[in-house]
Amino acid sequence: MKAVVYEKYGSPEVLSVRDVPIPDPGKGQIRVKVAATALNLSDWECLLGDPAYARLGGLRRPARNVLGSDIAGVVDQVGDRATRFKPGDEIYADNLTLKGGFAEYAVMPEKAAALKPKDLTYAEAATLPQSGAIALQGTRWAAPGKRVLINGAGGGTGSLAIQLAKLAGAHVTGVDNATKLDHMRSVGADEVIDYQSDDYTRGEKYDLILDLVARRSVFAYRRALKRGGTYRCVGGTSRSLLRILTVGGLVGLASGRSIGVLVVKEGPEHFEPLAELCVSGDVKIHVDSTYDLDHTAAALSRVGESKALGKVVVEI
Image (cartoon, rainbow, N blue to C red):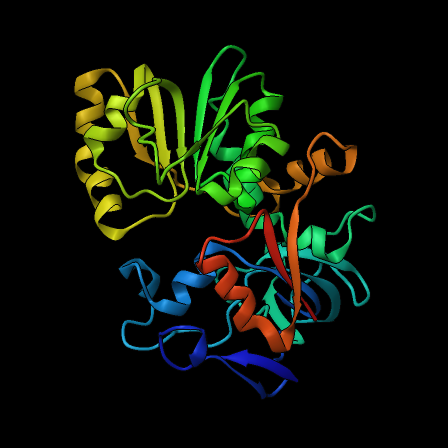
C-alpha cells in the first residue's frame, strides 16, 4: 500500500510517499481502508517533535512513522476478539494511539471507532473525532449570559467551539490572526480579535477562556478572567503548559478563578454527540481544503502555518 512516512522529526520535507506492507489487525483491532483523514495541530507537532511532549514514546525518532489519527473509511478486516464491526461497515475514529491515517490502510482498536453517520461524507466525518471531543469538553462551562473567549478560534476545533458556545447561549469572542477574522464571524463569533494587534488579556474579562494555543503567562490568563471564571488550555508551548500545570492551580485558587489544562477524554462517546448536532444542522462542518495522499506535506504545512479556516483533509 502507499503511505506517507517519516523517520525523523523535522519540517514537511522529511516526509516521503512509499510502498509499505499492508498492516494486519491484532486482537481487538480492525483494519480500515482509509477514505479520508483530517489533520490536527497534533499531527504538525508530532512531525516537528516540538513541543517536547510531542516526542512522548520516541525521544530521538518517531514512535509511529505514519501520522494521521482522525480517520474515516470502510472496515476491511477484523482481528481476533473484535466483535463490534464487520467488513464493509463505514466508520470514523480517533486513532490517536496508533495513528497511520496518511495511508491507504490503517489498523486501530475497535473501541476507537464508531459507525459513520450516513448523512456525513467521509471527509466531514473525519473532521470530528479529535476536534469534536475538544470542542465539546472545552465549552461545557458555556451558558446563557456567559462571556466566552476562544483563542485559536479560526481553525477546525475553534470553529466548532464557537458554534457550541453560541448554542449554549453564550456571548463569544474569537481570537486568531487577521486572515481569520471574517471566518470566525461567519461561524457565529459575536466579537473577533486579531492577536497580532490586540492583547485579549487586557480589557474585557471573561467567564470562560478556551485556549487552543497557550503561549501566555498564568498571570495574563488570570487578568482576563472574571472572578469565578474558568480557563482551560489544550495545546501550546511546553513552557506555558508547564506553568499552567504547576502554578496555574495555585494562582487560580488564590484569586477565586479556575486555571488549568483541559484533560480531553477520548473515544466515540465523546465525539458522536457532535456528529448528531452536525447531522441535525445545529453545527456546521467547515472543510478548508482537501489534498490527495501525494500532497500530504502541503496539507500539513497549511495547518502548521495557521492558514486553515476550519479543517484540512487528506482524501485517499
